[in-house]
Each structure stands twice: as structure tokens, then as C-alpha cells.
Image (tube, rainbow, N blue to C red; front, side, top):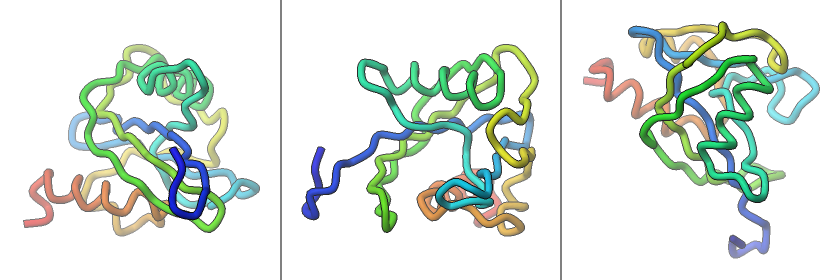
Amino acid sequence: MINANSRPLTEVVAALIWDGPRFLICQRPAHKARGLLWEFVGGKVEPGETREQALVRECREELDVELEPGELFMDVIHEYPDLLVHLSLFSSRIASGEPELLEHTAIAWILPQEIPQYEFCPADEEILKKIIESSGEGR
């Protein structure tokens, strides 16, 4: 898909992984674009993959866990200076394994009300608002 600026739209998937009232966030490595910002685990959809297959692969590569993707939680299109992304966030659960730091600088399990304590990637802003609202924290 191409936007008005002829920049390709990059398909990205991410997992909203819950453990009771907490959900998992990951801190990007300092040397990458948007370094040290927090995000949901995930990555680019490769040619020939479904979004769910990409999500399972990314979670295996980045956290060494087997993921069970669930329902689509939210879609977001966001334009960064270097990238136009279509982010699909899936409610998910870890089927097996414990998250390990294979790719990220840090990982954290946080409550919705703790979101303001972290600096997230801009594409996640609308998603974070929806998490707060759906948790009852935004009322």
C-alpha cells in the first residue's frame, strides 16, 4: 500500500500480553530507531506470512516464548519521519516459556495506571489510551 507521499506502508504486528491485571512492555535497544522508548513486543510482517504467524515468530525471536495470538485489539496507522506503519495489536497470551531479553534493553509487566511512568513509541499512544479506558482507569 502506498500513501500520498509515495512512502510504502510497513505492516507491523504487536502483542498485548496480559498476566492478570498487568501487561508486558519492552524497551527498545538504544542503537535502534526510537531507541530506549517502550513498546509492545512484535515486528514487521514478512512476505508470505499472516499477521498472526509474524507475531508468533517475532515473540519467539525477541522473547523466546511461544505466543498464542487472540483477537485484534486495535489497528493504528502512524507516520514517523522515517517510516509509515500500519500497526495491528493482538490480545495474546504466552502459551509456553518465560520472557527473556534477547532483543530488548528491558521488559516490564505494568498496570494500566502505570502507563504515564514510561515513554512509549508514538505509534502506541492511541493504543495506550484505549487500554486505560477499557481498564476503567480512564473514567
